[in-house]
Image 1: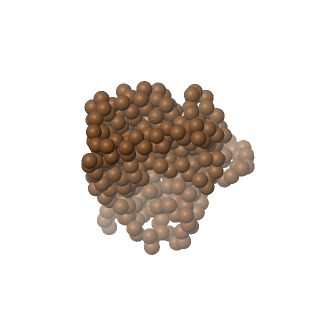
Image 2 (image 1 turned 135 degrees about the vertical axis):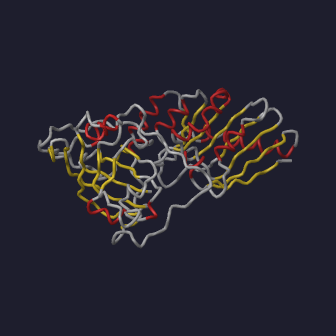
Image 3 (image 1 turned 60 degrees about the horizontal axis):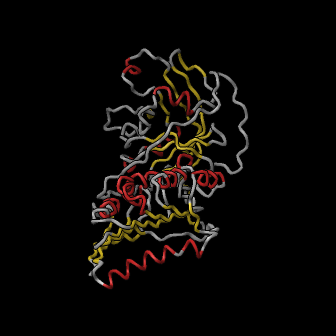
Length: 389
């Protein structure tokens, strides 16, 4: 008879990632089957070491055309060498949504089924619910259930040949990315604000929920330089975007924000800096943050010398706090150019963003410990989004 364990990820320390990794502890593994709605690179990365040794017996189904499954995620999963099917319903209003992870051994099978997708959120960061079930294959009823799961999925490619698409070469994934059926993880916009906030957000004091799981962060990649300009040069008019804000690229993400970052003084004698350092944050190890922002992220702006050692520019930033947009602001950014100062030689931050008119919006205790994400609008690289979540 099957044994069952309920998993309530987030509200307990038990994660779906841990449970899925435990599936592979069964002896003599003969079949591995995955079915999920959404696939991301960081999600596959979480269980890749367990999947790789069993690629020859792996069959995976993942939804596409859903604005979440990514090119990077499917490339990583396809690269393991198993059998991969992309499920395209042909409609945005119909989503392939079954989420299960099955590992069958010679005598025992284990199944995780519930709400967890093959994403970093699904396996670790989100609040998710699921069941870990262990089947005794010597039990007739247990064996029937496992066989039914495999059979129901195995017949899908033949029954829906226009929608259950076998991936046979990586160029298919490239074509689906170009066609918009997969997304580029590094060009994702922040969650679209469901509403527009009024005032400075002081009335929204709901803190970030404290879960019993340590959140993980997805890796970043270096942004490409956008139209480098000489200091003081006039900025050419950017092409009109077809859909403003659609093509946003994540170019930087902070570590947990501090009181100093958010311009919140510790006491009456503490001076407000009025700005935040854009430092290493979560950038890849090989990216030199001392030059990155001036040379790659903000190159399309019209820069001028504020002092002999500081260049200054202004840009438009949309401010999104906890999923609510508070509008667009003109903010100053400054880059210290010295390469011989102690600050530079110690690899400290050389770039600052002035909070300006947004200072009253961000100086709230409930934002401490959250992260700041910086997005660039690739349709107009003079526009950016600041999201704290």
